[in-house]
Image (cartoon, rainbow, N blue to C red; front, side, top):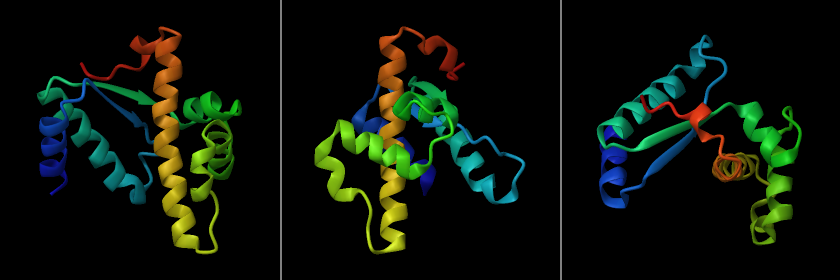
Length: 130
């Protein structure tokens, strides 16, 4: 299912790049599905000729908040400061909703990191397409 979805997205949307966050703890059993998904994303993107960039979580945190050890909440807060229209999604009285939106903010942070590093002309260090 995941593979079909990725293939369809890459075919329909024809992106030039895919940007993902690396998993710093591949040895932990519960991270295995994430590691498999990351490998599949790389392989599928490669087949479609799409460049893949990977950023470490601390690189993303540093780029977005200025602190490589920032929390998910700090990331969301920094993004809301830059994009006030996203404040609606910051915080919630429901734990599941807050986790969901924190993941959304993490995805936005990955994209912002790509833009910042591209602006600095340092992308080649993060290209894992080969």
